[in-house]
Length: 283
Image (tube, rainbow, N blue to C red):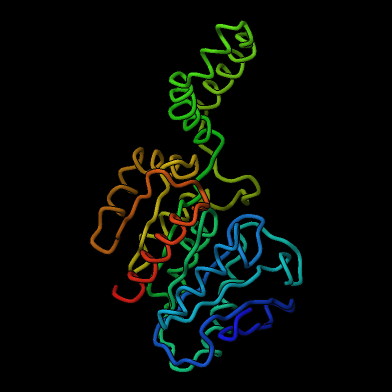
């Protein structure tokens, strides 16, 4: 940690959670809560979340990144992104207690953290903004369609494929079987995430409902070289309701055409930091 950071411990339904607050000791009206996506902890892939928090703190914007229950240094049982609303709420409670004068918070999330943020934000009036990167909308059908549309078409234009064919090394039978399975899956009925309760709507519907009910501003950042982002784009293209929501005036969008899922190159990460910081300061 730097001198401008402090470790926070806080309770969530009887379990101890751990977070790192960047920008300590400064009063601020708006802060950023960085929500972790996937099976990660608060540093993030290639330390992305730690670097983002420090970049925001350098702008005078406090940022808190934390571990869900069951992850990193936090106690309790692990849970899916569909079951972290209490964790997010407890983190926001602690964030407000730690930063004098804070009036609102922006929730920043990558992948299924963006999905969790969308399902949560409308329930908490303290959340004034969302930064959503490559939101997770995966279903088995959606994944199959994305593979057919993006992977297989691109593969036809790769020299390595035709070199294998010329050398007699290409497995036509195996490829045909895999392609056939993908077509069958792509034609299947759309399903929600595995593990959703039977009485609940699919998580993608709850994301849409959350976005519709949320009254704050939204910044959407999408990678160009990422299957998750492509799935999201395809999902939106196939839904008139999603398109109407994302065409609204309160939604801003940036695309990084070459970036991968976690913005793993230094220039991609720094671009995300600049977009995030400028938007948080000015929306």
